[in-house]
Amino acid sequence: MSRAILGRKGESVEPERIVETTADGQERVGPVNAALTPRWVGPATFARLPRTDQVDHTDIAVVGIPFDSGVSYRSGARFGPNHVRESSRLLRPYNPAQNHSPFAHLQVADAGDLVGNPFDIKDAISAIETGALELMGSDTKIVAIGGDHTIALP
Figure 1 (spheres, rainbow, N blue to C red):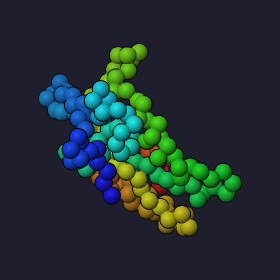
Figure 2: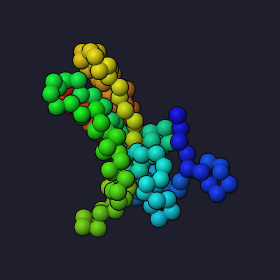
Figure 3: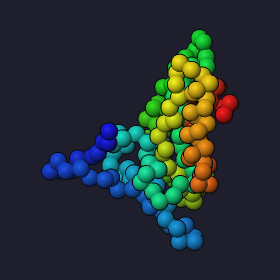
C-alpha cells in the first residue's frame, strides 16, 4: 500500500526533498523539506528520508526489525521501529551546535522492516539474517532500529 500527499485538486504529489551535492559532484537526496511540507504529513520514514526504492544507491540503510519473541516478560520492542520513525519526524537536516548536515555526505535511506516469524525464533533469526545480508550485498551499511536483543544474534 502506498500513501501519497494530495495536492489542491486531489492529485498525488511527491513532497519536495532537500538535495545536497557533495564535493565530488554526487547528489544526496535528503529529508522532505519541512518549510514546504509540515512534519506531520506523509508516510513515516526515518527522519523523513527517502525510501531505498526512491534513490539510485544507498550508503546507509535504516531498517526496522519489529521482533520481540525472544523475551518472556517485557515484550513491546516490536513497536520500536514505528515509534522511532514517528519520533524522528522532528529531526532536523542540520545541527547548528555541530555545524553539520549529517545526511549531506552519505546517502541514507529507509529500507522498511525485516519480518521474522514471531512463533519460531530460529526461523526469525534466519529471516532477519537473510534480509540484512541482502541489504548489505551492494556495499550498503545498515542501522537496525527496534527489536529485542535476539536480533543481534545474526
